[in-house]
Length: 314
Image (cartoon, rainbow, N blue to C red; front, side):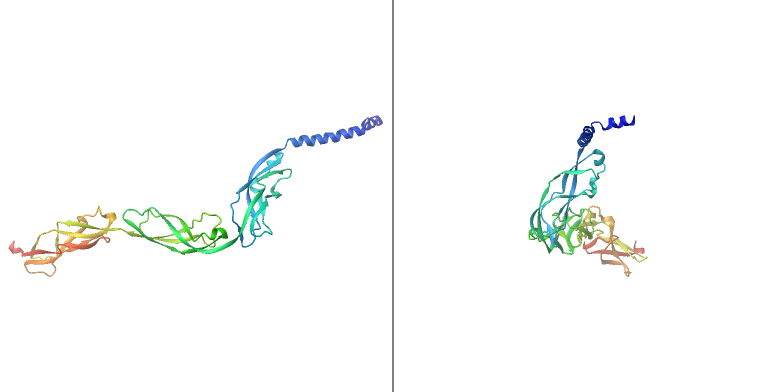
């Protein structure tokens, strides 16, 4: 019985072996047909740039890679960890064409790289040049009504920048980012970043400067007439009559209060202290206001006649 079974198994054994091999090959082939492609985009890193040199031309920010494998294996691929790079080791300055390579350490087993596009990158490597350039502030808008932008001061006035020789020879200044002054009502110091838009030009140290924006309040001259002049410090047994009891003042005041400022916001008076005799006295008109930002330029008339009488004369 056992002999018959063994005989059946070994009968035409070479044909059976060939069939098994062919079946295995067919299984591998069919299994390979179930593989699929996945497209990913990966940033390109430049490695081993020679000391004192830098890349001066624009490079593609990323390369496209076609990964091939079973869906179950491709699902394990995290494209955030895939790294593409160009190696400049043992390179000097000049124009070069370099192959884009991919670090395979983060690629799962069973996943292969089918295609990289572009496969080659043209790179220009130049010496790094450094120099001091002037900083130009960029002031935008205007301060609020009643205020004037007077001046701007920068500290430091120049900064050290670096970049490839071919670009640096044409640069003698850099700008700041926009400084909006539309809400400034007083002199202000701001930290402002430099606005170097060419990514190949870099500040050697700090990319921030201190900008002092000098804002001055705008003053105007206004003429106001007041129809009341007050006698102060009148002796008890005397009465007074101011002859021509009005005066006009010429004032220097902030433009922001020009429209609202009126005669109600100041007083005009004559000081009778120490005057005890009846009669007509010519006294200076005195201006007084509670506002510290309003200044007297002139009073017309500068003096007024004041008639003093004794109470019994009334």
